[in-house]
Amino acid sequence: MPVRTPRPPATDVVAMALKVLVAQGMTGAAAQSALIAMAQERGLAVRNCAALIVAAVDGRRG
Picture 1 (cartoon, rainbow, N blue to C red):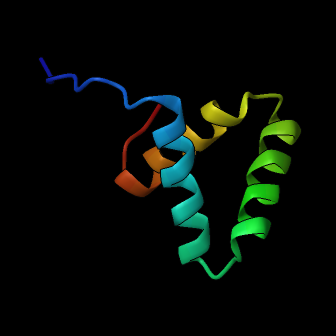
Picture 2 (tube, rainbow, N blue to C red):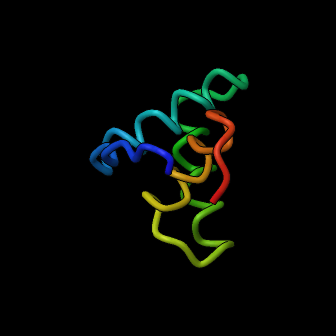
């Protein structure tokens, strides 16, 4: 059985996702706008969309 690690607080997940987007060449404001737009397009909360971005970078599925 895989070991489950505790989920980071939502603010940490959002900050990590913003760092990922900035690392892709966006400015801080553009990264924040992009994250909000992605969440709205998918009908998700921003923290859930951020968690998907972080999971994709970590190579996790879900």
